[in-house]
Length: 132
Image (cartoon, rainbow, N blue to C red; front, side, top):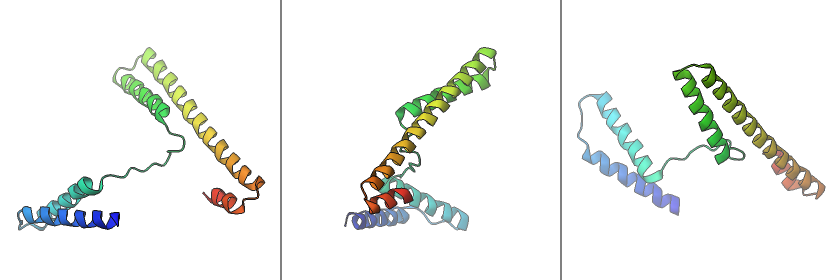
């Protein structure tokens, strides 16, 4: 029911905005106007959904390490000195180790869950987790 309400609200918003814009003679300009109205309405009414590919292991700690590494890289690119280069390599090493450790922990945890389902003879859960 909620999705239907959002859908109707989205459609009404697009219709209202399309009525407000002026018609163009050029097809390309008209298309650009329609495209902008649709994108703006989608952002306002539906919102943006982010892909969370690495949500199992990529947390705030990883984000901070990656940001520090990227900042050190920018600093190194702007002024390439031995000190900046060493600092960047150190930050890169730290970020890589951290992310690798988090991934390994996530996979170990998933493996233990699968083993636990197998030991408990929970076949449905076992195959569901195995397939995932």
